[in-house]
Image (cartoon, rainbow, N blue to C red; front, side, top):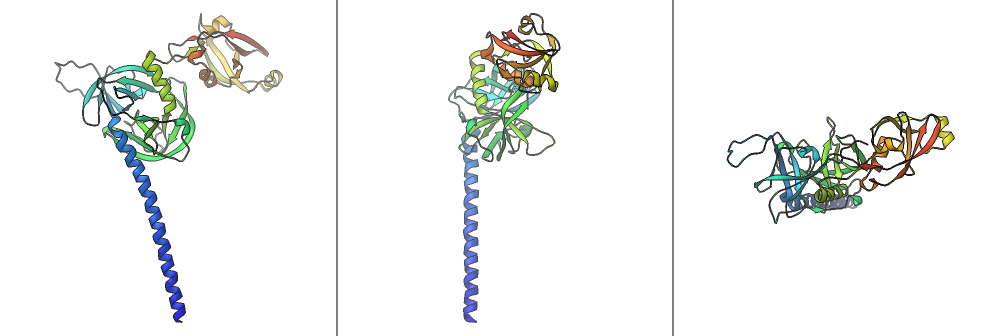
Length: 345
């Protein structure tokens, strides 16, 4: 009997010991999580800014306070005042005002704006500023911890945390082009977070927060920082991103199966030409209405998005073959894209 009682006490002690060990392990995990979030927030909050859009330029003699007509977030990525944000935050803004985390306010000058990737760069006249550390979005993995900082509804330097929900998403820009390699996260974003940084546990920026899906919860998106680094470089050096154009309007169509089989096409869809701009590369190449574009420079074209992805800056002035279906015939035309001044194909 006594041996049974002692055995029972031993079992209870062992159970309590295991529970204590599990509790200690959980506490260590939560502490590590907290340290990662706190460290990322403390390292980057001084570089996160509030961006307000005014309806007009304000002179030094004008002391009237004018409420902003729009607001968002951004972050300083160079110590001499370059700020990265979303295009939709500052696009065609008559006045841009940037507020730092310490309360200082600066009027910002627009440097460049790329609606096709929803990215923009502005600059403030200040030096020795706190700047973020840019990471590598190629190394991001689904499930990893991410931290978002921004100014939702005007609440400055708000921090939220979550995980990477998915990679390689595509998001439609307001211009109609697809933004590729978008990061999906469940770190809570709200209006005003647009343009703020998405950080990893090492306090590196891996994305630019850009969009949410309403009324869904936990479905938020960020432009990959590798995309943002390339676009920012283009905007700083040239004020815009060079893209090629061919001068056609089209829509996605299904190609009859017999035509696909006869010509050994790689896809069962293509781009039907709805209109060709006069004196455009498409017009000079001989494209006609109702032609169906099926490849460009040897790469299959299954839809308008495929074609737009290929029309990048280095294509400008470079002749390339374009295969089209005209009726039931397959023709190969030579086309030389010129430089786009807007977002059309």
